[in-house]
Every structure is written in structure tokens, then in C-alpha cells.
Image 1 (tube, rainbow, N blue to C red):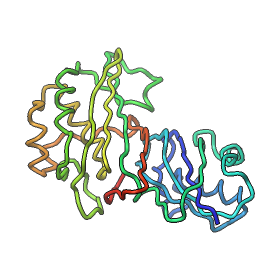
Image 2 (cartoon, rainbow, N blue to C red; image 1 turned 135 degrees about the horizontal axis):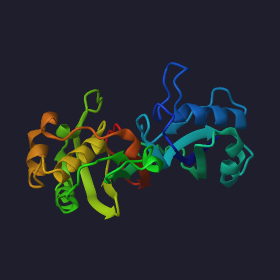
Image 3 (cartoon, rainbow, N blue to C red; image 1 turned 45 degrees about the vertical axis):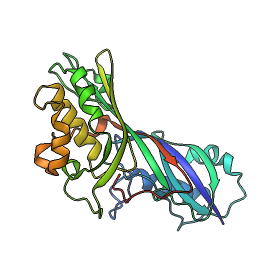
Length: 258
């Protein structure tokens, strides 16, 4: 039996998130991947385990998932073999063998997400599925200052949506920064794990900073308050992309929602 780590990219627009649901009528990325691997390996009970439970409409460039399978297909050829079995908006871009005790979620040491804001006078229809539109002018310099205040190890309960099942809301943010290219503003966040809707709440808070509703220096006090009502709104999901997941086989990660 081989344990194989898949790297998967997908456009999350038409999916109800990554995680498979009880109802077969609910289409998820995990469900589509499982259908494909069951067909490829002729194993109706084959399942996969993903690293990050991205929400409805959220995209990924490097989701990770493992499968345990007996196969004569060379591991590096699996992406080509599975390609015809997947819809066009899901692609397995890499497959590699890993140790039998490797776990894509618990062995993860950090993840990077990108959030895109289109800050123009009119909506750009090409970006409607991959960014959030903000009409009012945003002060990007203040957003840059505020973003740095997220860096560190804190209890991020103020940035966790209701419904989380984790036992601890303490997380470490290794980096958080904002950059602008024309009308597009990008937020990048790298952490050891994220709470339910955490990055989207951080993005909503930074939007409020850009609008002058929250002072950059208030970020730390909002974190310390552990009060969800003091942070900004939860920003829209379609602007969020899981960029990368990192592993160190000598360490284990915290319990994560996303």
C-alpha cells in the first residue's frame, strides 16, 4: 500500500467548499476528487484526506490531500492519468510518495492565503469570481501598517466565526502584508493554521482600516479583546485563494479549521 500526496488546484466557484457533505446533491471538491480516484484505481471505497477545509467559493492553487492505494501506475504519472476523470476546474498538478504516517493536516507547519480586493470606480466583470469589489477609495498605506500588527502568536478568538470546533483559538501569524497593483489590492497571510473564516475576517478588518473605520493601531487591541464584534465584517469568499501549504516532517501543526 502506498501513501500518495496529491497537490490540487481548483476554481472553487461552483463548489460548496472542499469537504464532502452527507448529501450527494451537494457538490464539493473532495467529492469530485474521490470519484476520480475511485474510477482510476478501480476502488469504490477509496477516500482522500485533505489539508485545508476551504469554504464555498474559495479557490486553491496548492491544496494537499493523501490517498492510500495499491497501484502499478508510477506515482509521478498520476496527475496525467487522473486528468480526464476530473472536471476542468479541478487539476491534480503533482503526486508524490510520502511516509505511511504522514498526515496532510497534522504535519502542516504553515499555510499561505491570498485575498484580492478590486478597488475601482466600476466593477470588473472578469474579476467578479476572484476578488471582492470595494467602490470607496481605500488607504492602502494604512492597510499595510495594520497588516503588520497581525504578526505574532495571539488568541485570535476575535477573528473566528461561530461554528468552529477547535479546542484552542491561539494561532501564530508569521507574515501578513498588503500590496497594490493598479486597482487590485492583495492581502497575503501566512500562519501555522487558521480559524473558521479567520483570513476573511482579517481581510474585512483591513478593508475597514482602508475606509478609515478602524485605526491601524487598533488591531492589537481588537485581538486582545477576543471579541468578534470588534473586528471587521467577514469578507466575501470568492476573493480568497489557498496559495501554499508547507511541511516539516519533524513537527506537528495545531488543530485547524482551515
